[in-house]
Image (cartoon, rainbow over all chains, first blue to last red; front, side):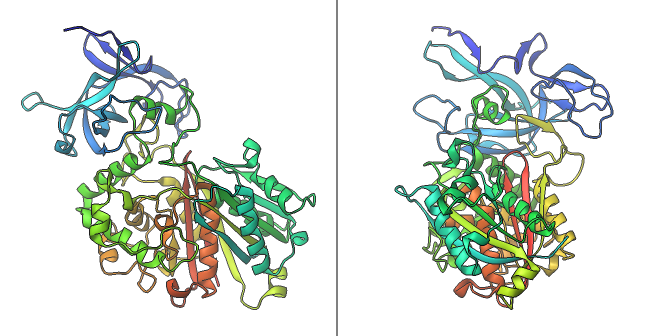
Length: 146
Length: 393
């Protein structure tokens, strides 16, 4: 079986760290507001002074809501042919950050709201040069692992 | 601030018009509004126009300039307003301010749009710094899927069923079939709606608005001008614009903060409606009808609750009892709404003012809200934009 090279759909948004997959964001040291993607300044109108530092987010969160992309999405979204509907989620991370993401599930209908989920980095399509293009996804936590 | 009246309203029917330019459609709407107002083009002192996203405007959103050139360049000031799908409402707000402030006595507000085929591609940019572009590139969550996610949360919180959602589309078409300006004028059964293609679970094709071409215009004026032209003016008691709050928790880009308290919905819409009601000195329960932005049936459930028109979790039962029909306690979208018209994005804010005007004049025929005296219009647009207006007779 051939192993294909993996490239991120976009640089600087997520990484595999020694502790596992993480989203790359920032946090304001003054008001603790989390940001994803990284932000050079704090946008909280009630924050007195923007003091930003890089912060990694994940892997644990709770599925606030989800939906199924039943039809092939328009560009710039990409997918493998033939199109298979995928699930997207809105996930509240333990760090107070709400993010949108693809969901990693075999059956999109099986997702339950408020379920504990975990960050993973997985391919969404193979590009013209045969590389697997990856993005961040969340998958329901396996029983017994919480 | 001076009193502002809506003196004339005009519309080009909604549909697909391959051989007609957006400017030609705006001309039809403008001429109808001028004729309705009994005002000549020469009497218009300024134009506030929605900047079209997809057509005309010399590629710069200069659609107001196109309309002025089309009608005859008289040298008047033109304001082109861009606010995503709230642009028509934004143009109405600027026109309203021009009259209310005393700067002008007679202003044309116009919005027209010709939409490309298919679902709206929300972002106009292919830049890696554009949050909407990133969201579609990295996740792939177009508008209907975003609406579906909001809807799923409501289903969990309030037990909303697929039938509750379908009932709203059935209601829309029961009314909209009477509107000669509407594009989709057939009735749907529950089976039709629930049997239409699943776009993004739980939303079916007939539960989201399609895209259309359309144009609408209104002539607004000072009280002095209005009293010379009509004995029964419709008053624009208030007009407001708002943008989203930082902490409302609505997942617009890739990430936001988890809100501390309260339900997650469009803070910009709640703020705009709240301001419009407050400055018109109208309580939510006093409204006789509402034209709200029903891109999806979900908003007909969420918005009335967000704005205090009914209690949280009550909207489904109001729909079920027929209370959102023109003859009910809380008539919503008696025009047929976006579901029956299709969204001609930047024209919709002006389309709503036309419907409110006709309702308050009791000219709405079979979709008339009996004895309508106070009415609310609301739009929503990309960038966290929203507008609202209260009209009275």
